[in-house]
Length: 510
Image (cartoon, rainbow, N blue to C red; front, side):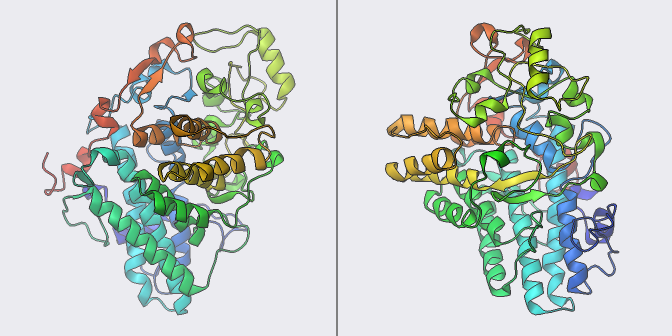
């Protein structure tokens, strides 16, 4: 497949998925042939739903590649500092050892996956104007496709381009910028060019959403809309240190999404609630079985990836959570009970305590100190929705932006809105200033967004040194997974362009 690009001729194949009996025209499962996909706006809406379907499908036959969930775990959490799992055999992924390996499956996957979505979004953008249907529907569909394209380019840039502070104001290489449904050879665009295009796509999308006067139907959180465009804009802006834009867009993104209640927060992070801005659809008749994200992280899953290797919070982060904060109860405190300080495996007393506290743990599950109870499957082995954006992230973006804009009081208020006003910690008050305030923002990003795919991306853009220590040195990483990685190490935390692109694209010199 040339340059891992998915041409229009294959769009029918890409959008095929099982059709749940109640979801034919709503859930992201429907398909139609490439020859008729853009004849009408009704068919084109199915194509947009297909973009969502691509985000939760199985890819390749091994290693659990499952759409966006893989990005969150393998690329966002495994190599980070706040997330531990007893998998010394995965030291290559966890230690960022494949970044310069242009033929690695782990190098190929995000490129293949995001350009698959981009290729299909480009076809929608190119042909929707000629579809039969109301003009406002065409505008709305094009806006959705532009939103997907912008999101995918942001994710590609975070992986395959240097952090913004290392790009010489955007002059270093970014990724291949494909804006049309063709397979022509194209060079790597500069980082500035790609980020400018993301901004343009989002500006165009917001304009089209507004003029269309349309929005997604109630209950269809998996569809992108103007709020999602604002959220993608905010995350992009904070990634490139455009703090004023990040502040503006984050506020707009969360305007209609109040913070979730404590009951919602502790209910499993697998069903949309009032705080979720955009998620990926999941249901029992749309399951990926043992390949789903929740089959890797949902504490009650019967999948061996959970039963044998439960995902855990690093003790160094756990110890920073106040006892009055509800989020502390979402991880297993070993207290004075027995557990292996290298593997995390709990002994009989800790296992008994865990099952008494969380009786829906699967009967044959092993128990590890600091294991997570944040994520819960709705059905076995890994059924549920996957969150992409929620208001908590937007508040944290606002806090960070306000900090760098020297709006100290506003940044403090953002943190209090996240933690105190929401009820997560009724005793929280923020009085920190200067460097201590920035550290507070970073700490609460780690606590609030744990397991949702942010840790590595955050530390990369901040240029922070990553430190993983074992029990003897104050943390809970397996001895084989410890180490210190500076911002200059591991190709500056940047994945190289895969050979599956460079071997067929004559504009990329390798």
